[in-house]
Image (cartoon, rainbow, N blue to C red):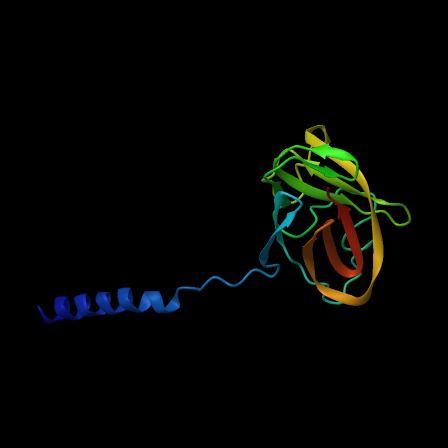
Length: 171
């Protein structure tokens, strides 16, 4: 009888202590971020994961030139507008899109709005699903930008990271 009682007490102690060994989830290395703003009458929302430079060469290194890039980390960046807008001089209907960039070493970069918004990275990216592609300018940043960040301005939106700023004009 005493051994059954001891076994039951031991079993209860093991069950109660198991939660002490449970692992708490670690925060993501590239945290999820979002930015929302108005451009004209349209409300724009951009959801992305924000990686850090961490001393790495980003453009032409971690992010190769001439290849479609998810414009962030983890899941593909999404771009959403509640009104039809113009990107550069091209019409983009209201909706939610996967947002990608094609970095170039010397030429203008290409901004891509793909009709498949929920994708993991650019691994299953399909160019036949592109709604719009437009050339965009980049400029050098005066200071290094450690974490990737998007900013919405009255004339468009910016992606700033490492030593580059990419401006996507919106009307």
